[in-house]
Length: 136
Image (cartoon, rainbow, N blue to C red; front, side):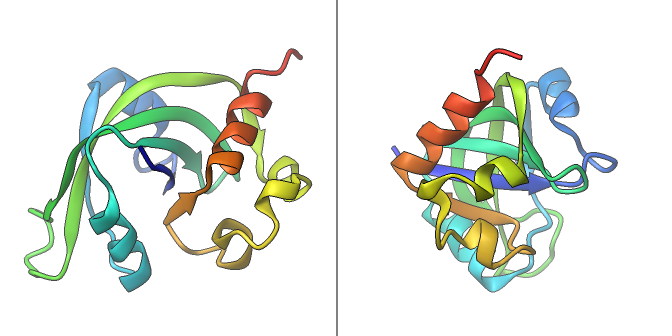
């Protein structure tokens, strides 16, 4: 199983929307590197949902269908994956907390701020899980 971080603008489609819907097609990705990351996803992989406008990870999702042609794109190079909600993180994880984590040194999340689909290492995933479950 691999781990990913998927960025969403909460005013367009928030993690609360994903929880309500249960599952959605993750469409609209245009960046070539982000598309390559989508193509690498497999059913069963886990993803942290990150609200880009708020700059924080807010929930956990599961990839339920690997990459397929993006039905909204009309471009054969673009792909989508299906994502299903798992659970909200009890404590959202702000970007500044991730910056201070040793595991995120050199991460595309920090180096390529506009990349919308980011691979995560096991250590990075564990850091998000730990920080997201801390007591207030």
